[in-house]
Length: 118
Image: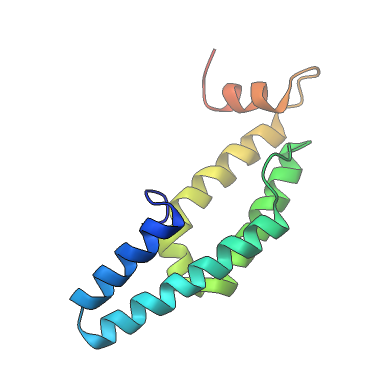
């Protein structure tokens, strides 16, 4: 709902969906949406868009911080369900990038190299 809709449309879809659910599920949806709103705000404050990473180790530190935010807002089980696979892939890529000691490569080039791109 977040990725596909602007705030106004998202609010309307949330209301429509909440009305179609049993009361307990509707309350759970509303609580989850509120937690996601709070998470999005905290994420933007902690990790403003447009900031370039200086190194793979900085990327790992950012991923650790993002993971902690996710756990704070959603709980460990939900954070793992929502983001676990993505975090695992990002962590593996960043670890491979951090082991690349070739001089003169940009972080982007290290990422391409770690993914097997020419």
